[in-house]
Amino acid sequence: MVKNAIGKREFNRWLNEIGSDEDKRQRLICQFYLLRYIQKVGYDKAYEDVTKLISSEDQVEFNKIIEGYDIISTKDSIFTLNHNPIPKFLFNGYVNGKIDRATIDIVMTRNVLRCWERTDETYFNLLLPICHIILKWDNSKSMNQLNSSLVTFNGKEYNPFELVDSDDLPLLDGIHKIDKTYRKKFVLGCVDFARHPKEPITWKQIHGDYKFWLSVLKLWYRPNQENDCKLKTMLVAMIISFLKHVFLDTYGETQGMLP
Amino acid sequence: MGIPYFYTLIDDFFFSKKNLLKPVNLINQNVIIDGYSFFYFIYAETRRQDQSKSMAQRVTATQFGYDGLWEKLLNSLQQFKSRCNEIVVVFDGIGKSDKHRRPDPERASSVIFNDDCAGIPSLIRDEFLMILKELAIEVFVCIGEADPMVVHLAREHNAYIVALDTDYYLYKINRGYVPLSDLNSETLAGPYYEMTDVFQGMTQKGVALWATAIGYDFISLETLQVNFNCLYVIEITFV
Image 1 (cartoon, each protein chain N blue to C red):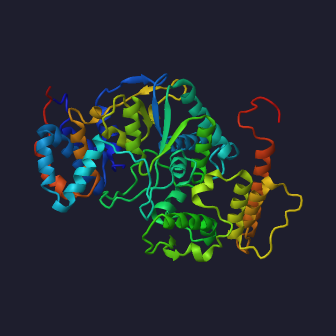
Image 2 (image 1 turned 90 degrees about the horizontal axis):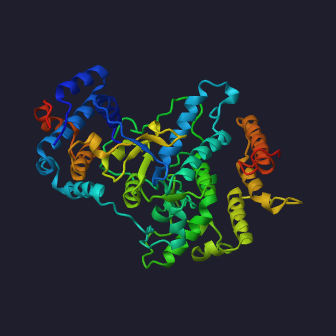
Image 3 (image 1 turned 30 degrees about the vertical axis):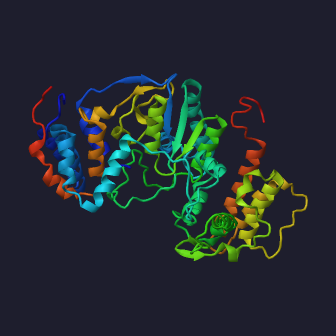
């Protein structure tokens, strides 16, 4: 039963008052009319009348979407392009927010930074070693090797096996168990790979904890005639922010205390 | 999902005509928070509050105003953590575009940013995740959209949904949906809504039929308009 339902007259009056464009008007009309129709005739009749207007090839998908509101399926795994379930630690890491979606996207679709609109290959190069690790694992689990050595970035295909030397790369299966020292070395290695350094950085008297951050800055800082002033300003801002974060900010841990 | 203009229909039309106030206090309740809704809302509120401040005082003056946002996010989440029972924050995952999703002229998000120079900070999601970790609040990142998982968890945990998304009117849940815009962040009190507040007298299947026909392009809008026109619209009040 519907109590105190608001009718067509009131709806039309309101619609005229808000002065919508044609598209908005049409959508609001459809929403209101269909809602009232289902309320009036009930689900069974409404379903019959609505599905008459849908092509036979779309009926299955249409029904599946409707069912999804009542019974929500939950997935306990993610599958790679080769239909392998990803390792449990990777799935848990993703679901708990510890592993970025971009990594899982590589696993599932072999697309790198799919939604990213820029074309700078530096960011792709940062992820190439990870692509290598993922593809190597996925291919080792799968019999089907068709087109399985390629990833896509900005519409182009790349072969991580040709671009990355795999000697020092960890295997995916054990990557979550590697010790802290090796983990730092691996991450630094990804940054150095992206930098394509002609000469290695001289880390004289630089503490190991800061090597990664300094490498990333060096990777990012590529001034040219157009952006030199802006980049220098940003570089100084980042250094100050970093120093502030390390030495001054405690974010509530020592509230009220002097630094 | 985001049905365009659904918010307009609900807020400006349906709810303006009815007194639907059903108050709830979320203290000691189980709560499922839509992650993106939450931090977009906090950011939009911060932007709004910044309008009356000098440029030097504005948290959102640049894309790097993480300090000020950190405090606001932390303070807000601490309220939930210290006073609610179970909390889970759910995030959207890797979006797969649905070929049948009806294209919309604007994203039907309830939070819209003005088009000015300062965009949303690019690391705000990461900052939000760090705060959740610091507060030991459970996080769940979905494989697809967050809405169905938020609803699933709300049903499973007998929890209220806290978000700012009209999609939550489309689901039948035990407790209710509490829009962030109406929730008092200090007292955690606010109105809650249920599916039947919008879809009076309808079952979940009926609402799902409506949402699928409207939100997806299996049927054109012209066809919908012609076939379900005003002849069937209720004219009189009845019980």
